[in-house]
Length: 383
Image (cartoon, rainbow, N blue to C red; front, side, top):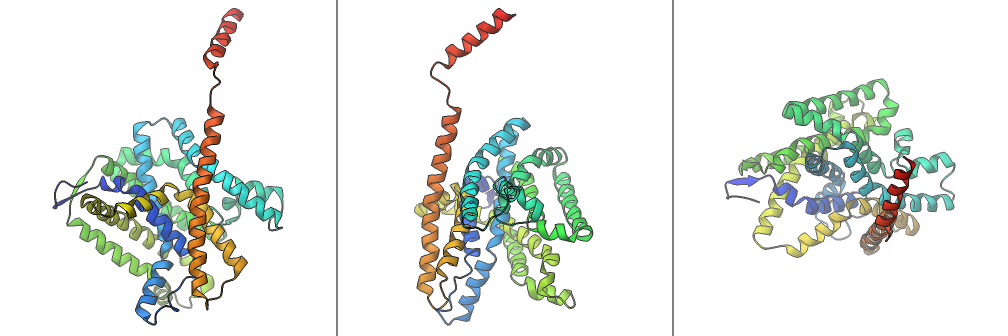
């Protein structure tokens, strides 16, 4: 949504939300398909490195998702600020589908002897096991459910104190993260993948107000966002050599203790990228182009949570089963696209089943009004 070529309306972030969700989801999937490479197709080292770096930085798609989630939740909560209603709405959107996928996945692991103990099984299917052991299967679901719970607190602080509320909340989260790193490094190692991502979510809540109010900014600011993206993506890509230069005697075993540098740089790059992509998507839409591609990314974005849960594990499972060597790139591509198509089909079926089940459970009997009247009459007689 733009008024002129000189301004950019931040509401475009909301308009392009599902498209960017789709792009971020596919990027995350590519990140977890590290068997893919270009070595067998070209000798151009530049292209090989570009693809490797693009694939290897795909986990910043998580930060893109969290930033957009913060924006979306601001919209939702500002319309109806009843905490109980908000929690019910958000949890009912996530829990049924996520629980079904988790039950199927961990039950299959249990049948194949890869699970042991009722406590571990219950913890995994309820998404609490990550906080106990740091196990990263479906860790993002554990994080997003926790963020839904604390969201009203973040919202109240940011709504009251605006910029300072956001900066104070982000600063407090970072301080707590570093205190955890200093006092309890074991817990930090387990939780850092989630802790370092929370600031993206908080900034998204703050940005949500400007998006909802359709704030106009000078289009020249997009160059600043582009510069931020380039600088921080460069830091992300060159994380290892930078840390080795800063930390004497750095080894791979110390990576967890210094990965916050990678996470925070990735978060900043991701937020800048969301703004840039929203401008690109809006410009293409206004030009009347790319409708098929936009619809495809929107479709993937609609099933982003299901795709995350299904594709990552289905792809890893098939990779482990078939053990495709690097000498057969055609088989690698077939594995990637086969997992992709199968995951989308399973996503759609899973969502349909859960929607049907929830509608059935909430369906009122045909004589509901009659039964309600009878119940009221009985209460009146007792009194």
